[in-house]
Structure formats: C-alpha cells, structure tokens
Image (cartoon, rainbow, N blue to C red; front, side):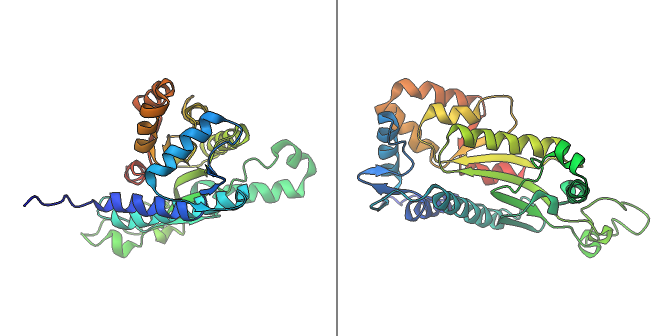
Length: 284
C-alpha cells in the first residue's frame, strides 16, 4: 500500500496562516474577495480564482474597513512569524520575539532618535528642519534580546569585564534589544501604500547606528502590476513576499498568461517570494 506523504511543518503553518487570513482580513462581498479592486475586472477575476485555491472566505454584506482588515492581516503575519521563529531556534539561536506596534526608537540601532525627538520638541526651528518622518513604527518587528554573560560563557569563558564592552549583544553592557527585522504588511497595494513602505525602508537605512535590520514587505495584492510597483526598483526593501505566490502563479497561467511574465521576472530577479520563504530568509 502506498503511504501518503506527510505535510511538512512549514506547509501546515502556511495553511494556518491562510486560514487566519480567510477568517478575518480577507472576506467576500457579493462574490468579490475584499483584496480585489472592484473597479478592475482583471483584479476581481484574479482575486476570485486565487482565494478559491486557498480556501473559503466569510461572506459579508459590506467590505471590512481598510484599517480593520489591515490590522487583522498584520496580526496574521505576526502569528505566522512568531510560530516559525520558535520552530527555527536551532538555526538561529537567541531570544527572539515578534511584535506589533513597537517604535524603532525602542531598539539599540535607533535609540538616539528619542533624544533627537526631545531636542526637536524643545526647538521649533529644529523641529521644522527635522520633521517627524524618522519616527517610524513598523507593522511587525522581529526583536532580538541581549544575552547574559552566563549564556555567552556556557562553552568556556568567552567574555569578561575587560573585552567587548560596547556590543549591544551583552546584557552586561546595558544595551537595548536589537531590531532584527522590520516587516511591512500591506493587504493590498495602492500608490500611497507603496510610498509609505519605501519611505519607512529608507528611514530605517539612513537613520541606523549599527546593524541594518532585515526590511521586508508582505502583501496579498492580486494584481501583478501593483506588486511590481513595490517589488521592482533599487532594493530599498530586501524582498516582497506574497501570501500565496504559487497559487497566484497557477491562476495567472490558467487565466491571465499575459501577466505571468511580469511575476516571473520578479521571482527570477529575487524581488518576489512566497510567505513561506520569509521566516527562513530572516534566519540568515
């Protein structure tokens, strides 16, 4: 008798992620998934076929408010990444957590921004010059906590009071947690959201003192041209991750082959990957 192939843990986690998306942020109103642009026939067709491949959505009388659906999508991404990091601890040792709603000034690389904000608040002229664009609060963050000397010295006396006195990795140095990754979660993509994501990425790059965190974006946008608006370019973002990339490719092959080349270009150019790739990429 032929044995059924067991589904991998990551495949199961991906399925749970899809179930959470379909139970909340992605709904269906009058037969149209909420991730579709109702004014675009192509968007409606791709979104309908895409959602049908991953499961069944809730049917609602009205499309959920954008902010509500967006927050639910962020929560789904947070849960997925948190579960994955717990499972991948043998590949990336350390104390990691995945959270929402944390300002970058709470982390070691950007802690000086709090001092800058206080100075700006005390000076109207300085505040005018600086603005407030640098005060970023990413959708989802992956955090690495400092390590005690006891843990560092488990395999032998690696450090003592005379060396490594400034690295934020040591709890003994009184450093803050490190921002390991910033993940922008956009259920769908519109021009204003593209600009916000790029601006956040540029601020993370320019304002850091120390290690640059991973900078990623996750989306459930069905239209390839809109995905390209954020995925293609100069590489401010490490990579864009689609919530159901293999399913999207299959839908385009069967229904919209003329748009498939753009998606393949993004994949081959290492600008677009599946959500299941994200936790493994963050381990690097």
